[in-house]
Each structure stands twice: as C-alpha cells, then as structure tokens.
Length: 133
Image 1 (cartoon, helix red, strand yellow):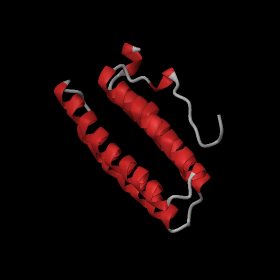
Image 2 (cartoon, one colour; image 1 turned 30 degrees about the horizontal axis):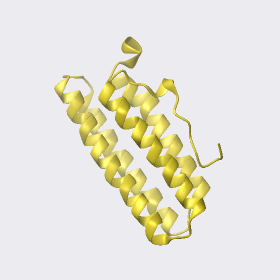
Image 3 (cartoon, rainbow, N blue to C red; image 1 turned 180 degrees about the vertical axis):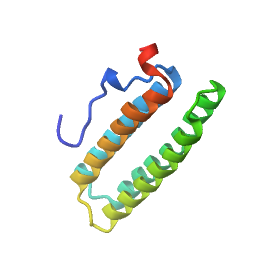
Image 4 (cartoon, rainbow, N blue to C red; image 1 turned 60 degrees about the horizontal axis):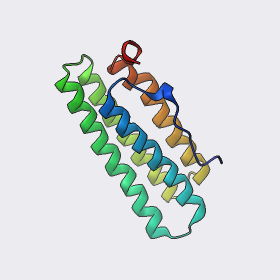
C-alpha cells in the first residue's frame, strides 16, 4: 500500500447496511483518485474522477440524510449542516489542487482524513453504531 491508498477498517462501520455499503464505495473512489493522480498525466481523466468524487459525495450525503430521516434519527438537521460544510471544504480543496496550491499527496491525505473523520465521529454518532456493531 502506498501513501495514495487507504484501507477499509471495520471501525468505519456505522451499523447501517446501506450507509456502510456506500462508505465502502466512497473509500474505493478515494483510492482510485489517489492512483489516478500519480499514475496518469491525463488532465481530462483527473478532472472527470474529481467530478465523480464531488457528485458521489453529494449523492451520498443526500442518501444518508434520507436514511436518517426514514429512521427518525435525532441530530439530522445538524448532520445536514455538517454535510454542507463538508461539500464546501471538498470544493475548496479541489480548487486548491487545480490551482496547484495543494499537492497531490496532500490532497489525498485530506480526502482520507475527511472521510475517516466524518465517518468515525459524525456518522457513527448519527447512526448509534456503538449499539449495533
């Protein structure tokens, strides 16, 4: 494993099968981005995979909110607000990568921390994973 890949760990499980399935895909996408940034100089492909990341993040956050709503989980409004902040943070870092204000390795490190932090400290709290896992 190089510095551009990030292994799935069971500690990321939230206790919700649908959310966990999406998180597996999310981490796989982050790893594909890490590989794409170092293995290809094709700017069009790099742009496309970053767009995929942004669109998937938007989809995932809406889906997660809908799952939480259906389960009538508390903290949903705070979680929705946090998702908006996370999307703004992601857009900023993508722009910094484009403008070469952030290096590729730094960007991938950000993605790993961004994913892990939100999953471990916010999603698990939202879905009460400690009771289910």
